[in-house]
Structure formats: structure tokens, C-alpha cells
Amino acid sequence: MRSEVTMSDPKVYLLDGGTLVIDESDVHWHINAGNPVRFPVYSVLIEHPDALILFDTGFDLDHVNKVLPFELPEQTPEQTIPAQLAKAGFAPEDVDIVVNSHFHFDHVGGNKYLTNAKTLVHKEELRHAKVPEPFERLGYSDLTFDHAGVSYTPISGDYEIVPGIWLFETPGHTIGHYSLLVRMEQEKSMLFCGDAAYTHTTLEKEWIAGFHLDPTKSVEAIRRLNYLARTEDADVYPSHDLEPFLNWKLAPEYYGGK
Image (cartoon, helix red, strand yellow):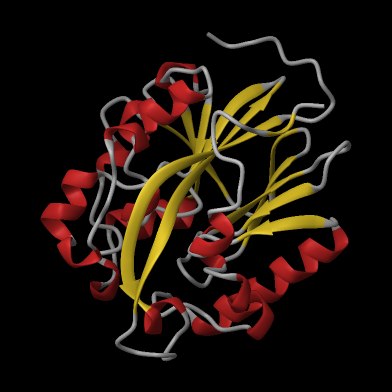
């Protein structure tokens, strides 16, 4: 059941969705090939006075085992979207808005549970997901986000979801990729990169990931994230950096709420 939220800062829960494995040359393009890297998959739940918002929904274990078993998925029943929402005191039907940084399989696996939510989607991302280029087919292999009854709100450009919660276009990894900024007053703001920046090294050295649609736009997106981090005085949360993830507060703990 939803609680009454009257604080100036929203509550931000980080939901642990398990881990996957890819080669380091795909984490940092053409660097250290042959070195497997296990990385976290997580979602961001924002309890805001105007809406309960979920950014990214992780991967579906059965799908990955069937279609991408080489990514060696590890996910317990406690790491599914319903179980993680329960840690924060919610059920899937409580979510008002779901936003995916993009529609690759490891960011959409829990969308099918969010039957009451509207889905904010970049209009170009939806088109590519449904009609992918040949090299995008594995990335866009889980189409369960397009479940019966899904309610899409197509958007483009930078977009304020509710006051203080912003999506910033960071294309390159995919055509319609979004990163998420949660503005805080009492604590530091939080910038969630999605797959526009896999690691802190990505941001420091401007190394793009091996999976991308447009390398030039990928570098531009990294530079934009660094700019936003400076100008918004925000802590940065990359998508594929296991070591810092291990020190983040995970649900039922939360950030903000003051």
C-alpha cells in the first residue's frame, strides 16, 4: 500500500535484479578482450508525491537462459521485480509510470508485471525495438515489454516526468536512450546513466561500450553526463560497475525522504 509522501525529497530505492556476465571488451570497447566481467542489473524506484515511478526493470531469467545463456545470468526469486517492489512496501500494480533507459533485454524483463503503469518511451526507441537492425536483434530480443494492454506515452527530447524528475536524451548506445536525474534538496542529486555509461572509467576516459548504435553519439552522451554531474552537483550511478554497486544502499533502504 502506498504511503503518504510529504517530504521535499523523493524516496529513491535501488532494486537489485541480479547479475550478468559479458566480456570486458564489451564493457570498454576493445579493451582487455577475453576477460569476463560480472556486472549488476538494477532498477530505480522513485516514491514521489505525484507518482510512483520505476526506471528500468531488469532481466527475465528464463528469457536470458533461453536466448542469451552465454551471459551466465544469476537471479534469485528475491531479485525479481515483484519481490524487490515488496521490499520497498509496494506491489507491481502500485507503479504509476515505468520508464526504460532503453528497450534492451536486461532493462525490460519486469515490465510485464506493471499492468497499471503507463510506459514513457522515446518514439524512436519503440520503433527500433520492434524492427531492429540485424546487429540489434539480441539486444532487443525480449519483447514482453509490449504486453497486452500496455499504455505508451511516446516522448522525445529532454522530459520532466514529475517536478524534479528529469529524463535526458543520451543516445548512441541505442537511438532513444534516456538517462535519469533525480533532483534532491536535502541530499545530493542522483544521476542514473543507464547504458550511456557502463562504469566510472567510462566517464573518466570517454570509453564507450562495445554495444552501440552510434559511436560518435555515445561519446557525446558521456560528455553530456559529465556535464550534468557537474552542473547539477549529482552523484553518478553507472549501469555496469559492480564494485561501487556493492556499497550502494539497496531496498528496503533508500536515499532521500528528508
